[in-house]
Length: 220
Ligand SMILES: Cc1cc2nc3c(=O)[nH]c(=O)nc-3n(C[C@H](O)[C@H](O)[C@H](O)COP(=O)(O)O)c2cc1C
Image (tube, rainbow, N blue to C red):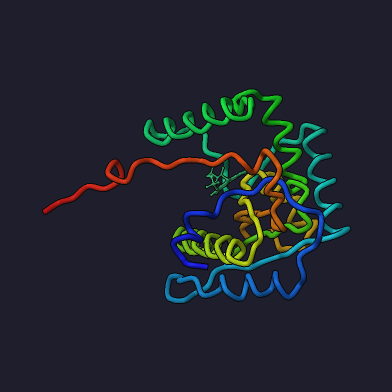
């Protein structure tokens, strides 16, 4: 697949076919993504791929924590404030989603339900967690973001769908305990991965982007 087409056609996939992806293909996607650049080639990413009973048990644990009202304590805290430009873009997303799908993302009950689906990784057959040592600097967070994008693009090029999910890190401490990951690791992001169900209405919604001339300043 052409790189430009891959970047422009990738989108967050939130409904998946039940069939599993082969271990070989999942490894190939990681094998491609590892060619991402990083500060001094430090490659500050560690990857866990979950499937089957282990994935189900983790989802169950997270849903139980939510149901019990346990306060989320992600390693990267949820933003409490957005500057005006970014806030306007988020409001635009909420508005277009409400118009297209009748979903009000500001409604706490909708958010709660959405968290449950997120904790189930949108019923994808596999979940991926990316983490790194928590002593690493912000540059390494930048690097693992590049890795995540490469992973999503490689998956897309191979006919797979993904969605990155901050929500899936809500219970970082409990997740690390469940996965036997040392507490000293920073749980950065979780992703669902599988074959996309392109017939599902949720996968018909496409986000838009700010016009390029509003992003760029030319100084000559
Ligand atoms: C860091 C990050 C966290 C995200 N967290 C979630 C999440 O918890 N749940 C979810 O459904 N989508 C999540 N998304 C997906 C975004 O909503 C999505 O990327 C954005 O709306 C643009 O849409 P697109 O990916 O289809 O281009 C996240 C994306 C990023 C980059």
